[in-house]
Length: 163
Image (cartoon, rainbow, N blue to C red; front, top):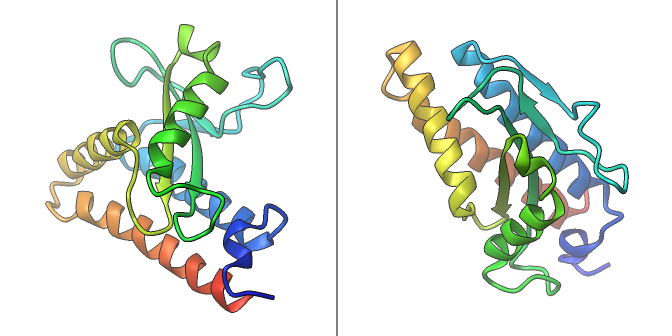
């Protein structure tokens, strides 16, 4: 099996585990600022039965709750172009257009080499700033991004080694 197979194979368990771990990390972070969240909330189904990865249970900004969908793209795998995060952002926005009428929808697309889409980066930066304000620790925002980076790197290694 080629070393990049796990990066592009939709059936690879490492890809699924990476996405679930990333989703867990992102949805645990708001609890640090006392914002309750729900992962894979029921009642937000699209016409095809799929639902977003999570939502805040209280308003986040402009009196609206946030709902997000997280994805990880891979610039190393041949099935994604180099600017994969912007394409994924657009795809997710179209996919959840119905929810955008009620919620502020945030597509979070992270690439295995590091970049995060602009909307997702803004949300994570705002979240990091809120965590820093509550904790008074100037390092908490950077720590959130370091955790995301370490998580992606750890799963990159697992996928390459076929673990």
